[in-house]
Amino acid sequence: MNAAAAGTKIPRSVLVVIHTPALDILLLERAARPGYWQSVTGSLDAPDEPLEQAALREVREETGIRADPGALEPWPVVNTFEIYPQWRQRFAPGTTHNVEHLFSLQVAGPAPVVLDPGEHTAWRWLPWRAAAEACFSWTNRDAIRMLAARREAAAP
Image 1 (cartoon, rainbow, N blue to C red):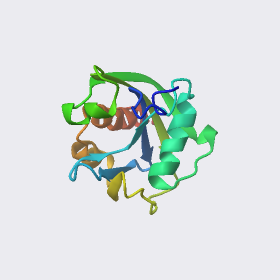
Image 2: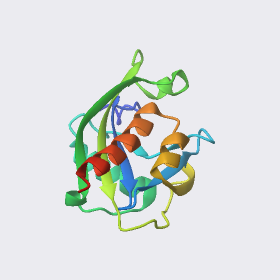
Image 3: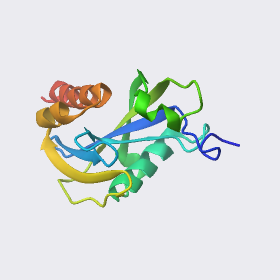
Image 4: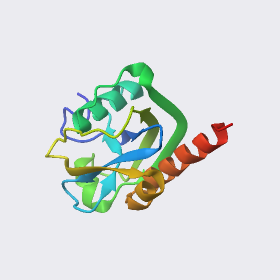
């Protein structure tokens, strides 16, 4: 039986920074924690779920955006962080850290999204600097800054 079937979350997740060509970033406000803004994120459903599949599933579940697999850009970035104590009960006993894999997804422009009200209560598109500052998670903030730095490095 996998962890999800046993009622516990798998401490391996994906973070997907959704952005426009102008680097407007989509942020979602967590339902369980008002004021906590983040990009799309979520745990794998099974230990053997492919990371790209998990990322596409989370984007679809959290925003209603249906992206083609080729549109998703996997990054060679993996973060390990301590799970906030208030969220540890969702994991197997003794689990204190999560491993997060980073992706980005470029969309044509800011567009309305369809939220899962059980997970998020609001959404907004912000310029990358404002989005980075609004994120409660250091991994999310750093990912947005890396996205901007990568874009600047690629500019002619």
